[in-house]
Image (cartoon, rainbow, N blue to C red; front, top):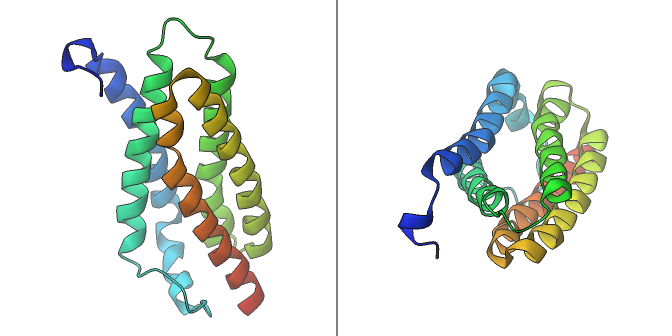
Length: 158
C-alpha cells in the first residue's frame, strides 16, 4: 500500500472525482429512463436494482485510485495508458444513454463488447506501470461482462 506521506491527496481527489462525476452525470442523464428497464423482460440472473448504484460507485472509486496510481508515476510513460483510460471512460459514459434513453439494446451490447476490449487493454497497460492499478480494474471488467450478458439478454428477450 502507498504510505500516506507519499500520497498526493489533491491528485487522488481529482482522479476520484473524474470517475465519480462521470458516472453521476451519466446516471442523471438517464435517470428518468431507468424505470423502463424494470418493465422489460429480464433474464433470470438479474442483480437486484439496489446493486447497480452500489457496485458502480465502488467501481468508479477503484477506477479513480487506479488512475491515480498511474498518473502519479513520474518515472513512466503514461500517455497511452491514460488515453485508453479516457476513451473507455467516455465509452462507459455513453453506454447508459444508448441502453436506457434510446433503447438500442443490440448497439448497447456491441458497445459493451468494445468496452471489454478497451478495459482489458487498459488492465495490461496499467499493469506494466503499476500492477495494483491493473488488478484494480479486474472487478470492473467482470461487472462489464455481467452488464454485457444483461444487455444481450434484454435484446433477445425484448
